[in-house]
Length: 374
Image (cartoon, rainbow, N blue to C red; front, side, top):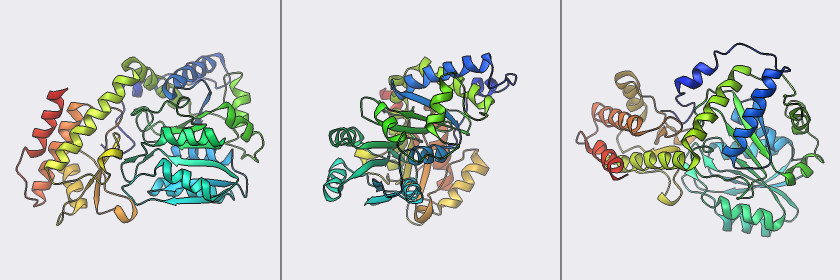
């Protein structure tokens, strides 16, 4: 139950057992076309989509390095580890990162972005992490920020690695020019692939940018015309992604989002009953990464160890300065009443084993209440 990589369905694992094929042959061409069609439905875009043999971090670097030249100004809200890494990618490209500092546990707002744009001229792009995996915060103002970027004709780059496929993100409707996600999160696929969508407006900028070699999106566009990738792809993972996308669309996006939201609600309700409040405020807490504050006097590393060794459930602590102060639970992909109940039960038991005073069943009762109400 990590915030990635997540559990993978058996049928997705079995898909990787298919025979190896030439990535320049007709079988791969059919696979590529299938992936592209399904990805456009999941991203909810009519624009171009590509699959990169890369981690999500590589996908985010691809996005930045295809549109940012040295000296370009980019607005980037920083409210956790991964938004900080996005800023670092901009700096390493030689860009000028105009940081909007936001307290960890809080989300940047459209008003803050507007204010930053009013203070700086000639801004080329806004770069935003939609779901900050380190703090369990979702930027609910993303649709408004998309409106600002369109109004001002500024590029909008979105890192959606830990949320796309688990919560609402209609790429075209919200005006996202470049959107990145990873295979190992809400799509219930093994790690190793990043997916990226590109708008028509973004192509004009990309063509004028000094691009990298491996992540050159114009090469991906060129090779896509013959349904191929510029370099050798991870073929077994492409098969796995195809099967995972089939499962997403069989369920339907609306139902999938509703399932994630229900499970997240159960986690938050159970956490509150156990004295584990959410790090994020209710209005912007994530439905895919549950970040709960550790109660006073509790060693989160000990609780995590007991959960793993005694109850067979793996969750994670925080990152950086939040390492000891929060629990993080992945609520994405293969998540249902069963996984939610088992995780809350293990957490509750491990807390008691670690000496925390709480009545057995307190958290579980809240889980049952949430699911009974659906």
